[in-house]
Length: 289
Image (cartoon, rainbow, N blue to C red; front, side, top):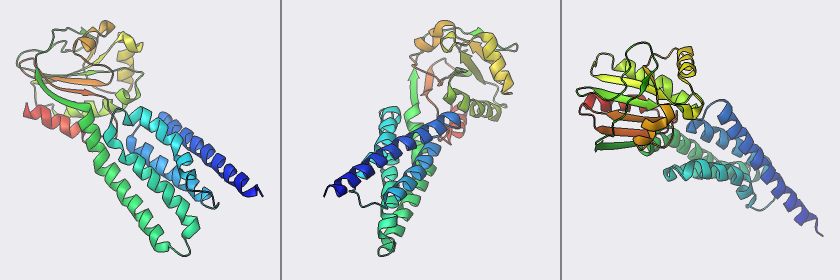
């Protein structure tokens, strides 16, 4: 008489186990390959869809969907949504992926139209989210436009060539605080170098990449790390993170733009490769100053 309740419990445990496995696959892959939000979303949607497809063979209640998606959503909520709440469609689309997987096996023979509609909605929603919505929300979250005075600071030059160590009147200065142990910093580096290359003809715009001993960096290690990646940017060191803290920044990567009068005009804290307009937006902003 209790075979059905036992069967339900088995499916629930299987759903939770698959949810935990999905979490390990998604975030393990993100740590190993890329923290690109689009990659995390797409891999999560695929994993959840196929896990739900397998679970859909049973006749368990719909709350297995909650158990399946809960581990992935819990980490995403803690790591992303508390900082950028506007990315909630990521969770909604993951739920659509689970629903699509669950209904696919159960109702394929008599509700094919509904299944096609759910899958089409998932594909369209994914295209919208990855192609437009998430990149714009990331840009809006990371970037702050300002017009305020800056405290005085002086950096320690690391490169052998000229290094701008402080804002100078008549010059625009872009300072990017960096760490060799920070994955988003490393992902941002080629885009920053490309932005500088785009502005080569603008002699009044200067860039400097800054590390500190807070990230266990030393001037020599910092220089070797950047040179090994063939990045051509002036390098400086911020002993004790004094300049970083004095400018009111809280982490890395952190980018700050000073105008020709030495005022802070833009700050950015954070980077994700899903922000596809980073280089274009930065170049356009600097040209307009």
